[in-house]
Image 1: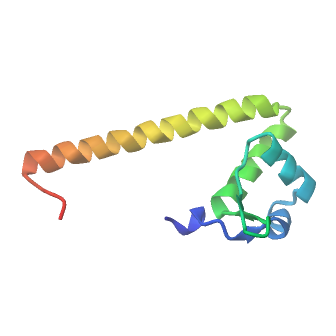
Image 2: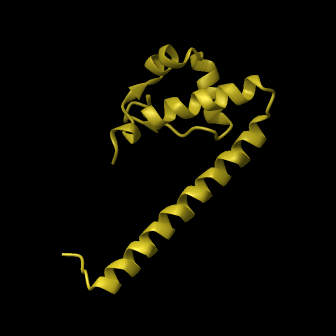
Length: 104
């Protein structure tokens, strides 16, 4: 897992980094735009990728885009990324098969 994807940042720090209020960050979670992890005590933990996503969401909200539209766009982006990852794995498999490489 990349350091950018590790959920280690508290909502207070995310608020400081992004300029968003805690309430606004929680609202984006309620609208299923962001998915923090929860500690055993119930505290939210975010990643650097989440911080970048929150900034992107905030920019879109400022442009007047509704949360429903943002969520649809995020799902499309995730689907594209998943397809691209699968495509890369398939191509790597074909290259390995062609040259006789095997995983150890």
